[in-house]
Every structure is written in C-alpha cells, then in structure tokens.
Image (cartoon, rainbow, N blue to C red; front, top):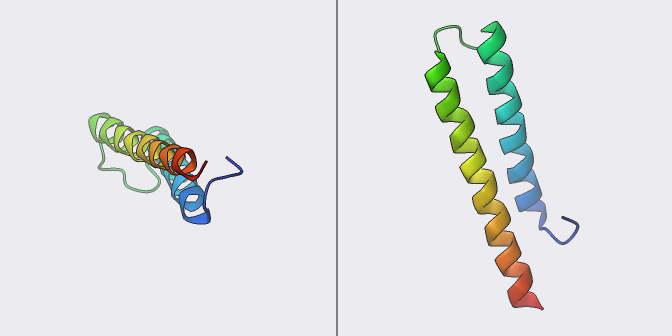
Length: 66
C-alpha cells in the first residue's frame, strides 16, 4: 500500500470507516434506527465493492508504471 496515491488511501479509509459505522449502526441504531439489517448488508457490500475497485485500479496503475 505504500505505492498507492493519497486519493486512493483516502478512498479506502472512507470505505473502511463506512463499513465500521454500518456495523455499529446495525447493532445500536445510533446513526439511523430505521435502517434494517438488509439495508446494512447492502451498504456494507457497496463499500466492499468500492474498496475492491479502488485496490484493483491502483494495482493496474502500479503495473503500468513499472
């Protein structure tokens, strides 16, 4: 990860924080109590896909650079 650009690191950090907040919200309901478990699963899967896409794009950029 040391070769990743700053924007990619920020994007991955946002995805990780979003996943953590979604998990916390599913157990406690502090952020939004009306979100059901199915909504939480959808949000977590979207953050996982966004993080995976960011990692794939950065790996391709690093390969092209070398």
